[in-house]
Length: 139
Image (cartoon, rainbow, N blue to C red; front, top):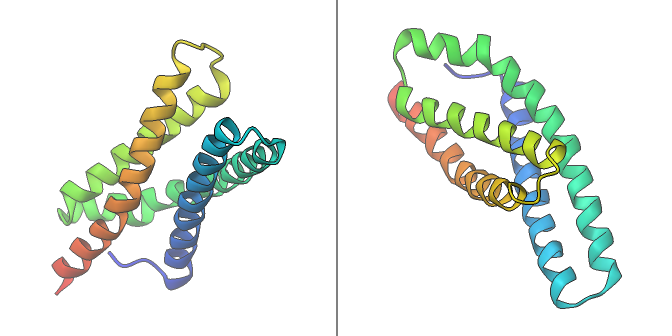
C-alpha cells in the first residue's frame, strides 16, 4: 500500500515538524518556569502557534489517508496491528488537542496535556515502526 512519493514525503514532513515544534514547546515551557525570562514565554507561544498550524495540515493529510491507504490496507489485511495503533494514536491526539484548545477546565487540562505529550512522542516512535513493518511485509 505504498503511497505516492509526494504524499508520503508531505506526511513525513508534517509529522517531523509536529514532533520538533512539540518538543520545542516543551523545552520552552520548562525554561519559562526555570529561567523566568519572558523570551521563553514568547518562544513557547510561537511554538504552540506553529504546532497548531501544522496540526491542521496534518489533519488534512491524515484524512486523505483514509480512502487511499487505510481502507485498502484494512481490506487486504496488511499491517493491521500497527496501522490500528497509528489510527488510534492519531484519534487520541485529535481529541486531546481539541480538549487542550477548547476546554477551559483546570482540572482536566493537565491530564489532557500529559496524554497528548505521551501519545505524541509515542507516535513518533510508532511511525517509523509502522513504515518498517509495512515495507517488510511487501517483500
